[in-house]
Image (cartoon, each protein chain N blue to C red):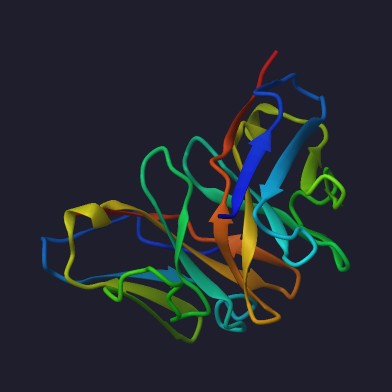
Length: 109
Length: 122
């Protein structure tokens, strides 16, 4: 059972922007800057797209952006493209010991 | 190019111990944190634990009574052992590397193995 809550699905049209929420608690998302986001296409391993709330690894499109407010983190995808159709997971450092994942969101374009 | 490759049995009997190995190439195993994650058929990801060569291992509270992660620097490998396996442990198991920028771990996983499917069944 996932600790961080995400919407099961979000959809949008090409070119639009969508936002995925990731609700945690004061022991994880609300406490640490170590919030990250992963994109996973079917049959593939997840890929890192955002780390430390709002930083992008080299090579990741600037159409992906992250933010955090209180105990909730968010991922925004702007200029939605067909290749953005995938599952998205958030993750956060938790309780000073380990990490937790979100329940995952299926994005449909 | 950094690559991680999981290896181990695809089928485990209930109550037995699972042993998986992650082979690391292209990166120094003593310079990063390394993690095991699993993904159930329902697709939820679960953090199993992580290890640093000089800092010990840390485990998910829900699994720590059954899990052990170790690191073999001579072979550039790290391993997962999970005891008392049940059908609920059936999943794809991934190994991954923590992102490091400068000397600091960034609390995110930038390199993943392809994953290995483990089925628990008699």
